[in-house]
Image (cartoon, rainbow, N blue to C red):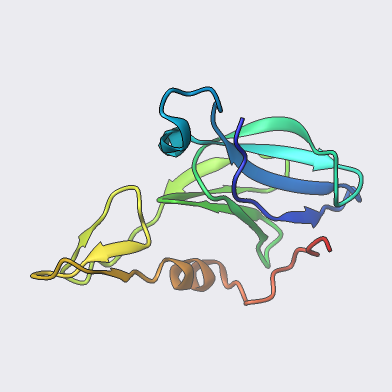
Length: 146
């Protein structure tokens, strides 16, 4: 199984929590199977692991987890995010609402848009939307493991 993405943090239980995505390593599509990634929640007693998968969050790729100022948790994945009151869920999946700025949003790559009349892409303000919507700051409320 492949497990890209993720960031570990210490929860209120003193354990290290990690949200990563995975897909079957024996898939005939190899790394191209990433589009069918599943986000899982893994837990360990120390930052270097071993981490044990505790539960499945849902579909997604390149997860990044943050704690919001109001105490809720959010996991950002390509094209959507999950939100819950606890590190253990239950997780509610929501889609980002982008202002396309007269550009076509490239599905599956929510941070990219195609400029009209051009073949090059430009970044869309997905991270700014997250920070604005949930009043996040550059320094997360999580204690990141070292």
